[in-house]
Length: 120
Length: 231
Image 1: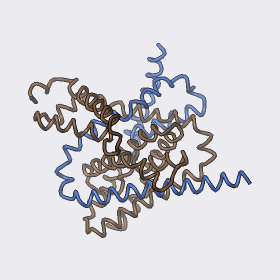
Image 2 (image 1 turned 180 degrees about the horizontal axis):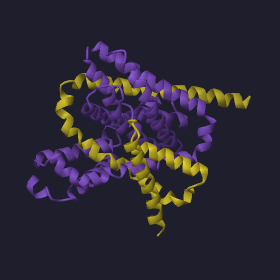
Image 3 (image 1 turned 90 degrees about the vertical axis):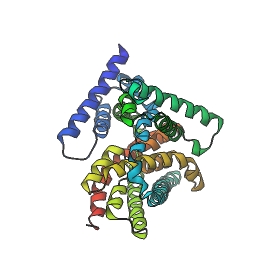
Image 4 (image 1 turned 30 degrees about the horizontal axis):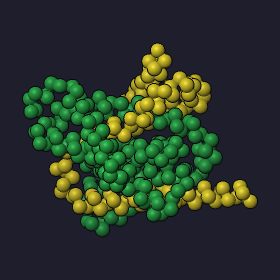
């Protein structure tokens, strides 16, 4: 019964998230609304960690596999991507690395500065 | 072959799980970034579909039940986030600043490159939201009059590429603090990057989940602003 109850809570929150994304005029998906709702529920104590933890851990664990169908769907958009493939690839490679390095470096710099200050 | 499989619900599920399992086995033997399990799994699946002349729709009849779990799975990213809330609050300034600079740098980079290559505006608008999670990216692409199909393709390719190169890039640029690693993965490669960040550790995973949410919401405001210079 434990798992059914946990699954119920997670599905209920996903459902509320889905309703919000249908009702509100923002381009925000059900999953993001749901994530925020669950986080608020956890912080306010409305939902305790042990009420969802087992099923949540499992769902997070299998996450990489869940992207396979969307990756396979690339076979359908192939034609539209093909015309500009070279530009897309160059922009994609460079900008992804730029985002990764900028984010990482800024975070690392600010955190290390703070930690250094604490040690003094 | 398509005729037989048209009515099956399990073919797509079996093919997705089988190819992913195979890809993980290959990865265990050959540990190079190019053998990314998601990339290999997708390529094997596409190969099977093309060779046996099976439509994507037929495959997706079963595979949709796998994608269906993505929403609850993303919702559950609140759990690692909650567990790491102390770190989150302590480094809130660094987290917000780094995600904001990353988003901005990425979009400026896309604009500059597109102008350099004389790419048309529609392509530029379609690529602007490429580092954020698919569903938000689709909405933004529509908002700024991009091509939504191209956006979806570019977003997925970005995720796979980001996850593939994360380890190497982070090592070259000496980004090794768990918080910085997580933010870098999530901000550049959204949920696929987060799946990768979770392999690195729980703090990395939590920070990466956080950046999906913050980067997504930031881009909702930033992308239309940047796009407005071109129309």
